[in-house]
Amino acid sequence: MSLNKFSQKIGILGGGQLGKMLCQAGSKLGLNIAVLEKDLSYPAANVCRDFVCGDITNFDDVVSFGKDKDIITIEIENVSISALETLETLGKKVYPSPSALKIIRDKGLQKLFYEGYGLPTSAFSLFNDKNEILSAVENGKITIPFVQKSRTEGYDGKGVQIIRTKEKLALLLDGPGLVEDIVSIDKEIAVIVARNLSGEIKTYPAVEMHFHPTANLVEYLFCPSEISEDQSEKATTLAIMIAEKLNVVGLLAVEMFIDKGGQVLINEVAPRPHNSGHHTIEACITSQYEMHLRAILDLPLSSTELLRPAVMVNLLGAEGYSGPVQYEGIESCMSIDGVYPHLYGKKETKPYRKMGHVTIVDKSLPNAVNTARYIQNTLKVISYQ
Ligand code: ADP
Image 1 (spheres, rainbow, N blue to C red):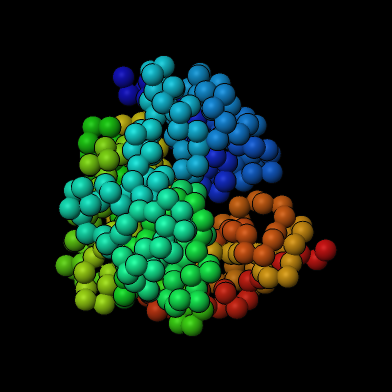
Image 2 (tube, helix red, strand yellow):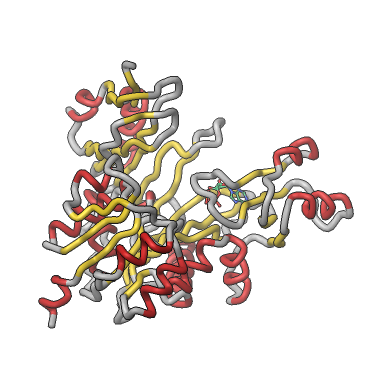
């Protein structure tokens, strides 16, 4: 019985860095993994022999890729949901389920879901386009400041506008969106939950994002977070509740705010491995990637314990450089104990493109933070062309 689990064919939609790291974890367990993605320049192509070129948003491509698989999973939400529904009717196991993915992919439906279950999140209203928002501002139904979010296809802050003054209304995004109250944020955290088909659940210790004090940019992520035990318990309970109510199988990353009053508020979720779990490869007993595979194969989940404090910095393409990538200063960073670069294998850099990340583990969190700052000042993602 358990041998069968290991010989199942797993198909991953998406061949980015998360797909690549899923393949690497799968290889450790000798799993049979295929990836669907546009072309061989994607990171997963370097580690997956069964790499199929196709469009993950295209119905036919996804159905024909999934037809001979036993389990289909994702590394990105923007995939053809109708194809996943068809695959489910063909008897394939699809994790996350298309019905959960439909809710998660639409920030409006996500908010309605939290509201429906009485889960804490900032107050919001839905709008069909920016003109509706402008009229609502005019007749006092919403007041500045507020946050506007596109309902679909936002990522890494694209698709989010913080409107603090009347002048900024010119920046409103068009299309269906939601407006929510600005949270007066003290901390931003994420908790990753793993849930297998049998309902076993594990949660990783909360990770905290550290923001640059002036530029509104995440500088690094660190774990353990500096939230209180109460807040950690609350955040973990909420994350588990969402995973259970969405009936998630696999991972669910839950991003939350701690406001200045100490309240925990849900921001958004992602049903897949997440940027906030990169450090789990070196810092936890079980990495998030292995955990996702264990969960979708309905295997025991194993420990999420943090073995060492960890800091994670993203390696983004430096401004002013486009072309074949070079990692300036990397050797000096690698001479430090506990520094683990992960280069995604993308050949071309562009300003702000995610080219890799570095995880730093250290017995002392402040030391890890110092090393992270050294890396940020030393390691530059550039191009000589
Ligand atoms: P994305 O899906 O693009 O990551 P998020 O919803 O996470 O978008 O928003 C991006 C960032 O915008 C958050 O990390 C946070 O800093 C800020 N933000 C989002 N919603 C709010 C809010 N209601 N109040 C204050 N800041 C917010």
